[in-house]
Image (cartoon, rainbow, N blue to C red; front, side):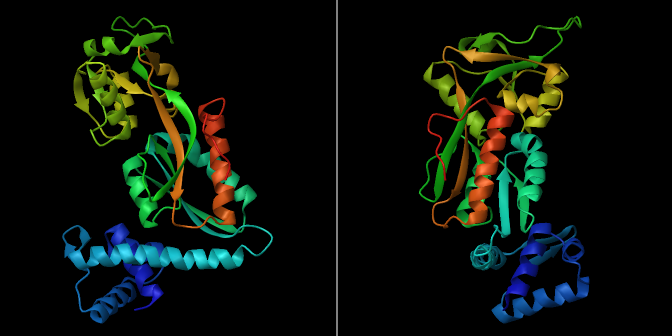
Length: 312
């Protein structure tokens, strides 16, 4: 077993296909297959099961995948530690963003990163906050933006700012007349609206339903949709209403197509946080990207940091 074989195996597992992985790795597919096969022979285990659509991990493959991610991340950190003795941060960092923030932050983050850290490399992955928490804990992601994360021993969480939740409706009524923006909506009034919400595992859904239960209200959930962008598309088409943050509406690219009324009685806020592994030492590169992300979030989403904001 060698690092190159582990890297090849991880890429095939992530892509779910030998052919796609070969293109990404820029090697011939037979050579890639041979290296993975040598790895299986060395471990005396089948790691990948071929299907009509590609490959999937076997139980042994899943265990090796988790180990491989940690090994490759450790090797990367060793390289970063050696390179950090130079004048500027170097190495590679993986940043995780929830989809609602990806559209707001990806472009300015990439542009700022390339401008400020030309010797470093960055990868960006998107996922729900629950998934990002797990990926940070297991080492697949170095730094993540999370909505309302639960306290975990494996994570070091820094609140950045609070966003008020609001009722999102189409900006035009049934008659086509444009509805004025702004205003408020009481939580008790939400029972009258057919709501389009994320599934129950979504951090925002948990927050909303917890508050509704505490105040004795039952929400009228008409549709459950995972994608925030798809939720907004359905709202714009008149299929219901949503409960989202201003940044989620802004990231739609067409904020004027919606009416956003801030929820009151009670006022509900969603806390946006940055999270890193509690067991991984910070590097010069991770500290720089942490500060860069914090500044971008404050500039894109709010006027100032949350009360518990702290500096790394």
